[in-house]
Image (cartoon, rainbow over all chains, first blue to last red; front, side, top):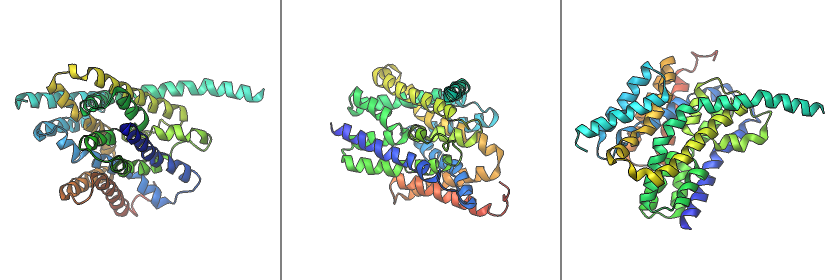
Length: 102
Length: 243
């Protein structure tokens, strides 16, 4: 029951930030500097989501995680295929873990 | 009568858009599965019931904060603490939705706002903000709810069958979420130096703040995003006047 309370609470605090800007901003004309700032949010967010989280993605095996994320970076630079990138990254991590004696 | 005809023709035009959205979501759909399976597995080992685990993914639908909540539940945190930590962590969606509110076609169909905004995740956001094929609400819904199906479905599969996977594969799947972010970022970064720099500043700032360890992880990521986006806006200030 305690967990259900947590889930309902988390649902509210996740949904409200997702929804509020649509209700507020769709009625306003956004000034140009702000628009530009908002345009830089995506790469800023992705950069911050990847680092440092990716390095610590496999507890106590930072090297394997680094190999995995480096594989993703290198592969997606040459071929823009999302699912293949994810698959190869997992395989690279798996291989490193194997050789590290996981 | 006229209205009826309009509705009919609209349906004819829009339902393929929904299907296009579902097709476009395929990489995210596939990318979510290992991450969702990992969540289901962890939820089970944390002691959650199948119903709770299902509701977690079905109602919250925010990967990073769900993983964080499991850690906090295991550590015996109070519900209020978990909810506040989630608010801080997911406040980045406020920034993402702010951006999307400038490009989503919501003026014609304001009643869709709750449904469109519920589906805003790091991944769907990365897709919408980097592609131009989404100016229809049906396309957006198709992409978002296909990803949703994969997230919820993967969670249940992970809970029920995750233990069958060899431990080394279970561990390796921890990288999937980050590989997904990389695959969404790189095509954009290749197009422009300022975008590459913004991402690097975001990653370096976040790493530095995490290393400092003064603020909670939710605040760290919000500050990193704000700093990186501000610095880039400021640096490129006058140059890209036309954009």
